Structure formats: structure tokens, C-alpha cells
Length: 139
Image 1 (tube, rainbow, N blue to C red):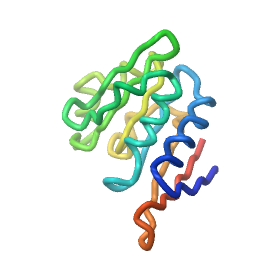
Image 2 (tube, one colour):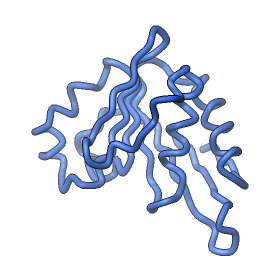
Image 3 (tube, rainbow, N blue to C red):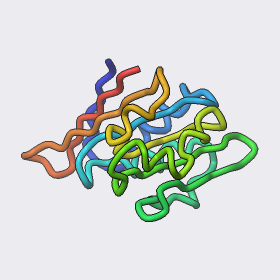
Image 4 (cartoon, rainbow, N blue to C red):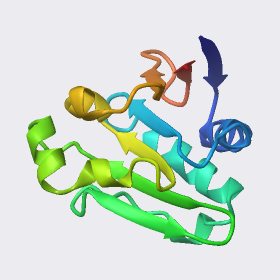
């Protein structure tokens, strides 16, 4: 397990860019952490690495945003509003696996729908420092 301490949003962005260098085209990254913990900011860093930085938005209401260029296909899911894996299957979510990098916020909600060998990234807020985050990566 890898641990990174982020002291600000810029740290999170830079760490995500370094993390993105290790990604393969069919990786599935599962992001977990409470609201405002840095999941979307981390995703922004990955997108910036792949030259897709101008397009970031949270897919809370659309479930998935697709980002494409000649370097990567990235599918950014926010499954917060889903109640189960069945809803994920009903929208065809699993059809994205293997077609590009999938980043799934709140992925524990659909744990049984996830493929094996996901990369889990957890974000923990610090109670004393509003800007501090502990980011844990489990491959």
C-alpha cells in the first residue's frame, strides 16, 4: 500500500499526475472518501496528465463523463446516486471496462460489479487541518 500526504489541492493534483504515469489503458481506479475529500480533484490531475484538463466536471447527475483524445480514453463515473450494482448493470456501466481507463467515485457502492485487479484510492480528511488529506493507494 502506498500513502501520500497532501497539504493542499495542488499537492493532490501533482500526486495524481505522477500516479497517472503508471496507468494502463484498461485500468479501473476506485475512489473512496467522504464528500469534499479530493476525489474529483484527483481525477482532474489524471485528466491533466493525459491532456484533458479543460474538460473536467463531476458526473454526479450524468453518472459517467467520457474524455477522449489520441492519448487516452477515460471514463469518469460518479455512482453516488446508484443504490446497487444492479443499477450499474442496467445503465451498461460494465461495458466501459477494458475500453479505456475507468475512474469510479464512490465505487464501493458497486463493489460486486467491479472487475478484479482494481486500484483502490482512499481519501481521508484531517480533523485538525481542513486542507490536509491522506491518500492511500492499494493495487
